[in-house]
Image 1 (tube, rainbow, N blue to C red):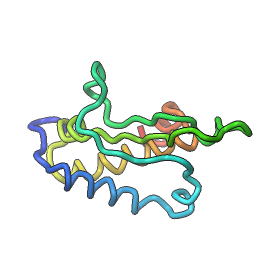
Image 2 (cartoon, one colour; image 1 turned 60 degrees about the horizontal axis):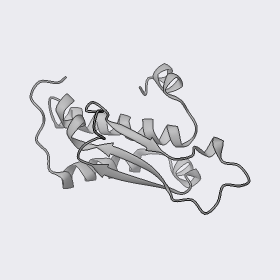
Image 3 (cartoon, one colour; image 1 turned 90 degrees about the vertical axis):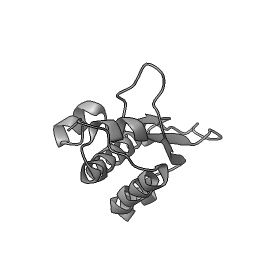
Image 4 (cartoon, helix red, strand yellow; image 1 turned 30 degrees about the horizontal axis):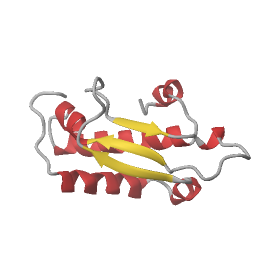
Length: 120
C-alpha cells in the first residue's frame, strides 16, 4: 500500500464512512452517546499520517457529573487515508478499520488493546 494516492471525491469518501457505520452492530451504535462522526480532509498540523481521531470523554470515563458538555467527536481524515491506499478497495477497508478503531476509543478501548485485536 502507499503507491500513488487514490483519487476520490469527498462525497464518495463520506459514503464509505456511512457504509462502515452501517456495518457496526446496531446494539453498539445504540450504546454510543453524545458523539458525532465527521470527515475532515486533513489532520491537525504536525500529524500528517493520522487517519482518525477520537476527541472527548470515553463512556468508561464518564461519571455522575458528566452533563452539559459538547458532543465527543470522531474525525476521519480523508487525504491521509487516500494517500496510503492503492485502490478503491483499499480505501473501503481502511475506512472501515479506522471507523471501528475510533468508535472503540469511545467505548474506552485503548490503542494497545486495539492493536492486539487486529484493529490497529
